Image (cartoon, rainbow, N blue to C red; front, side, top):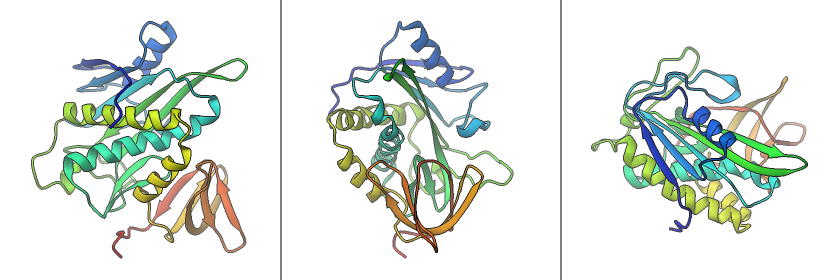
Length: 253
């Protein structure tokens, strides 16, 4: 594994939000390539403006990175982030056919979300990607109760002793360094192929909500830009954003 990136690692008993802390440090421009872990967040945030519920003992981790690659590559950051998370979990907990990445970066086990990733970035005029923050929330020992959502945790499928948040954070940091290096070297095709191997199996029936539109079709993977490919009754849709819903099916089925 390529670990050429040097991270400044910080661990706090509590923080309002690890992402907010990283963004604050980015604006101060005092810390480069920062990895922040906290035992408890008092004001965590989820994607699309949702509240993120975080029981004690789970993982709250964020990375601040100052890239050398162009702003056009920011669309691949959700994919390399989810690959780093998937690789860390499978190394520490084992490989399971029911564990996969849901486009673009949620980690699911038996269709229950066990982890979410929030990407935030800053672009300087006219078109320079200055920094990005990757926030990772992983349910380790328990899953919150959220109305209308199916959530799970590592304890649902790991029979051995659960790895600690500190150990998982360290392993994610190693894999993230590897995947950032691949993106920096222009290996988007390798990233795409690797993600497809660990993502939702092809051919599954999906419902995707994108903006005010709702699409129903068959999952055909992702294209060269990371857009979701959905075969509907009338056409092949390329979706750059949206919320995906699918029925649970194992890779072995």
